[in-house]
Length: 269
Image (tube, rainbow, N blue to C red; front, top):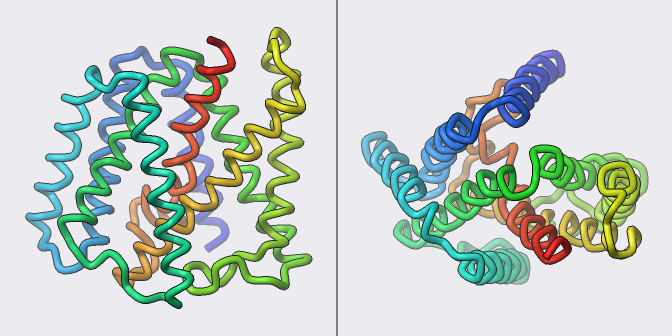
């Protein structure tokens, strides 16, 4: 199992890395739209009971709408959509935990609409981030998010005693989250000095802001876990052997990357 996970991770990182740094804008957009289609297919699985044909239709619809709407979302619209998505995710997770795991999202239509919004927002940012800033800043921001997962895993394994959200994700602990936050801060602080020597604000404050976004990415992770629990599925898909589905790999990024995009925009404005 571990060997499979490692091989899959190496292949995936290589493909994404080559496309991120070498592909032209059109190819990168095509790759993101392909990922959009896969993510939408998997999201349809959260709306229990859909037939294969319905999942295909939803995947095509989300991909086409994403492609069509890409040029029309203004920056203020992006700010609003990001804020509303973050608030919705946070309160949904909190409510699910407080009700001890009682189903909250029972409407298929609502689940599918939420998927359209989340996937479109993420896809839009992946395309614009690379073009407006740089592939390196995009990768760096992702790495800060991934570092909180790594830090949370090891610190939670070593020190974890107090459960974070037992009804959503029993394995996560407060100690793990704290450890992950500290690691993401260190990664952000070091990376900023290496990659942005001309930054006109304090490295410490910028690193804290980045670590705070990484911290909120835990909510994105919990949100997807909630949806999977409601649908009674372990993984969102099987496209990545040893890792699960597309959404299993990007759940924490889906809300964090729009936040990072806004942060970099405000800092460089």
